[in-house]
Amino acid sequence: MIDKRVPGLDVAVAAIQDGASVMIGGFGSAGVPFGLIEALVENGARDLTLISNNAGAGEEGISALLKEGRVAKVICSYPRSPGSIWFERRYEAGEVALEIVPQGTLAERIRTAGAGLGGFFTPTGYGTLLAEGKEVRMIDGKGHVFETPLSADFALIRADAADRWGNLRYRATARNFNPLMAMAARHTIVEAREVLDEPLPPETVVTPGIFVSSVTAGMAQGGVQGGVQA
Image (cartoon, rainbow, N blue to C red):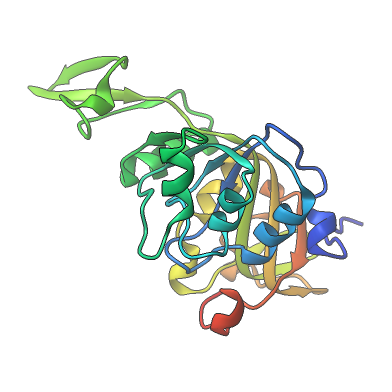
């Protein structure tokens, strides 16, 4: 019988090795898999390429990976968040590379990878530095830039609930990038507020288990912030 549950966060991230590309879900502090990120810090993997909405804030989450010098490159739409210092320090020292992607383009590149498509044209970024080296085309008299799919070796995502088959339900705005990233990674690891023995009601499932490799129960969302969002 299918059972994608694993006994702990450390076991869940054990397959992530040096040089891996890792998508990390969340927007602000909502839907961020803080427990899995903390386990990845303990895992010790280095030279990671991180794909996320931002490059972390404060001392936790993605910032903890940057602080420990584990990140070689960040692909994100907003690298500087309030209270963030570690991305800036690593970037200014030339220790981490950065690829800026407009937020909507980032989401669509990830969705395109998950859907098995070859890319898309968007007017966002046309005529700017973000279009350098990319195919451009006039469509209905408006300039467009061709963007390629964005996939990853792993995705670390947060869900409100998961069942043993890997089906996922999200809570409110914690949904954000998580469902897209689950579809776009070759190995999706889920930290859930609760992991159920019985199947989730089909009408509540957002991410089907076919996209999920493993699930484990996680820490309170946002660590000491008390878990107001999952």
